[in-house]
Every structure is written in structure tokens, then in C-alpha cells.
Length: 192
Image 1 (cartoon, rainbow, N blue to C red):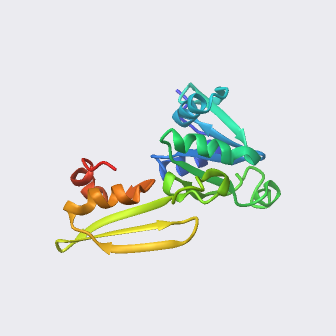
Image 2 (image 1 turned 120 degrees about the vertical axis):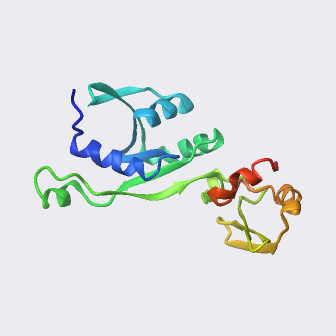
């Protein structure tokens, strides 16, 4: 059984492990490529071809890709379908990577996490409404609600008892709400 990943695939897997809840758009030249389960999910959601690239653990590696210059439209489709996207860019040229050794992989990093509350592109936003990202937290029995529209920079914070959270969120209609992992169960029943 072949369990050895190519250097490029080892890099992909390492970066993907840091962003398990997002589709990883991995930049390779003029394309963003997705692999494994991300490729299967993205190909279905975007109605694009699912292909394969090499093998991992003796299984074909599912792959799909989109041109980098058209990525924003794909991000919007994925966000509207409930996905998060981690955008992984090449941080050096192939020539720069070769200076470190003939088989060196181009250094890549996630430079952006695209979620409903973090959209900033005019083409992806509804001009008729705010695009709020909200956060709620309780410290020493005191709750606070904060919200920001990243596209405009407008930021607000207010004291908010847990009982008033639902009505405040209904008023604000945020695109995304952040709570600490340990409190997710407490607030999951609140609908906006």
C-alpha cells in the first residue's frame, strides 16, 4: 500500500488539516484546485467536472478546479450553499522555490477565509442590506453582542442578556454569528 504523499500533496494535506471546516482553494498556477472530499463537494455544488490527480493510499485522488480570475463568482455560489472557503495562495514563484532545491514545493499559505459574514467584494454583496458578522459572549454572567459590517467598517457593541439575544439577532439579521465552541449548544436553538 502506497501511503507516501508527493511533496505537493503533503503540503496540501498539512494546510487542509488547519482548515478542516472549509473547502481549500489551493492555488496552482492559474487555477485554484481542490482535492479529496473538498473536490467532490465543490464539483457537485458548482456543477463542474470532477477528475482525478494521482493516487493516495492506492486510491485515486478526486480533483476539480476553477480559474483564479473567476474565483469570486464561485465563492459566492459556495457561500450561498452553506460552505466556507479557505483561499490558499502561492507565496513565491516556482523559480524562487527551485533556489531552495530542485524538488522544493512552492510555499503556500491560506490568506483569506471566505464566509457569509466576511464578504467584502461589492459584486458579492447585496447593496440593499448590511452584511453583518455578529459575535455573542457571556463573561461573569454578563452577555455582550457585537456586530461589524466588514465591507463598511461599521462596528457596534452592546450589553445583551441571553434572553434578548434572539430578538436582537432578528433585528440585525447577521449573515453569520460567532460563539465560542463551548457555548454553541446553549445558543443553537435561537433562530434569526
